[in-house]
Structure formats: structure tokens, C-alpha cells
Image (tube, rainbow over all chains, first blue to last red; front, side):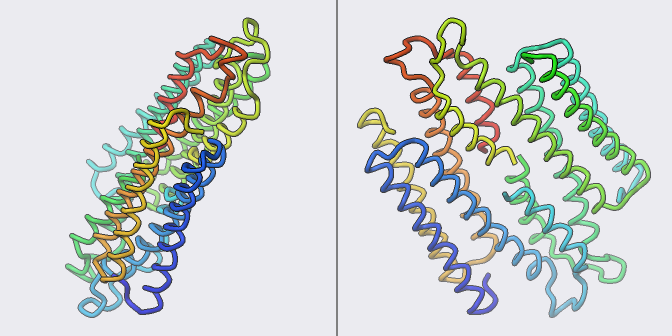
Length: 92
Length: 92
Length: 92
Length: 92
């Protein structure tokens, strides 16, 4: 799905950060940290996951809804931007 | 945005149902119903609102991302369906 | 559930604002406003609904989890505040 | 926060499953899997995260809002159950 090496690296960096957050949750549970700490760590990880999904959905909308080579200019960029704006309000 | 009279009536029916749910919340507060009742009424209204948004987003994706008259067949129906499936998991 | 006349008025004001937002969605659909307009109106109404739920949940946590008359001081205010902070991140 | 060894093991099992899901997303991105695959993997991981949060919130509500040793029986179990039911609808 990644369309350039740069995009791929950016996505992988996000996923690795999330993996680090999951490992921090694991350590917090192992060391019997308080509920408050664990709830905050999970909430932060959930936020990062929403951010990752937003990037992937954006990529999907901009690159896969229309085959740009076969139908150049067919995707209405304004309509796509409006959709992504709404999707982001739900991805929080 | 509504593309046929039937679609419009279907959307209006959804909105009117939501208005009825909001009025029920108002009555519950006025009659000092318990928190539990009020929380359930709000949760149900929220679910109906998510359902309405899902229909409008679906309409937007299927009818506005590509001008079908100018670019017939340009919207990848499979990619659009995958997008909507994901959007729906977040609209719950 | 409302514990003072002031609280009740504050909650009713929120619900009436939401009813006004639902009526605006209805008018937008009737006048065949664009999807973008309708999606924004729904997103705003959803946000207001989340705000209403947050207030009711807060009221529930602070007033109903412990019968203060029977068990004075039994509710751990810090633990309750931490819970509500997490609930609010999900209520957006 | 975990109150018995069994609870702790159960929570750790959940977190490790999530870590496995994150690693699967990482592998999918590295092997340039399609957006559809990646979106599904993220949605599944998000669901598992919500499940983990639900368990931790439940633990927090049942064990930390009231110090049971100091105030036996002070937590209204019905009110707590109603709260958790509502929280779960938002944690999906």
C-alpha cells in the first residue's frame, strides 16, 4: 500500500512507536503500576493507533478509490478532503 | 445531497427519529428520571446518530468522490466498500 | 437524577441546544444542502451529545456510586477524577 | 493495580495479544500488503485495545473508587454496573 519509500518509513515509525507503547503497558502491568498509570498508557496508545489509522485511510482515499493512471483527475479532491475531515473527527 | 426522493425520505425519517429521542431525553430530565435512564437514552440517541452519519458518508463516497457523468466507472467500487467497512467500525 | 435546580437547568439547556442542532440537520436535508454541510452538522451534534453524556456520567459517578449520607467520605475523589478523565477521552 | 495473580496474568495475556497484533501490522507494512489488509489489522488491534481498557476501567471502578476495607459495602454495585455498561458502549 505504501507508495514511496518515504511514506513506508513514516508508517513504520508510527507502528514502532505504538509497539513501544504496548511494551510500556506490559511493563506497567508486570510491575503492578496503579490503574491510573495503566489507563493513561492505554489511552495514549489508543490515540496513536487512531493517528496511524487516519494516515492509512488517507492513503487509501487518495490512492485507491480511483486508478489515477486509468482515470486521471477523476477523484474530486475537495470531496475527498471533506470526507477525510469527517473521518478524522471519528478517529479520535 | 439526496439523490432520489426515496433516499431523502429515508434520511428524513432517521433524523426525525433522532429528534424524538432528543425530546425523550428532555422529558426524562424534566421529570427527574434516574441517571441510568438518561444515560441509556443518550447512548441510544448516539447510536442512531452514528447510523445517520454512516448513511450520509456512504452517500458522499458513492456519489461525490467521482463525478460519474464526467468519469464513468472511475470509482473503484471494491476500494470504496473497504473504506466504508472501516468507517463503520469507527462510527459505532 | 438532577440534584439542584441549577444543574437541571444546565442539562436542559444542553439538550435543547442538541434539539436545535437536530432540527438544523432536518432543515438541511429538506432543502437538499450538500453532503459536506450535513456531515458537519451531524459531527457538531455528535460532539454536543458527547458533552451531554460526559456531564451525566460525571453526575452519576459523583452522586450515585456511593450514598454519601450513609457512607460519608467513602468515595475516593482522586480515583473518581481519574476515571472521569479517561471516560472523557472516549466520549469525544 | 492487579489484585490477584490470576487477574494479572489475564491482563498480561491481553497485552501480549495486542503486541502480536502490532507486530503483524509492522510485518504487513514491511511486506507492502494492501491498504485493506492494513486497515483490517489496525481495526482489530483497536478493538482489542478497547477490550483491555474496559477490563482496566472495570477493575478501577470496582476496586479503587471505594476503599472497601475502610468503608465496607459503600460502593453501590448496581450504580457501578450501570456506569460500566455505558462506558463499554463507548469503548467499542
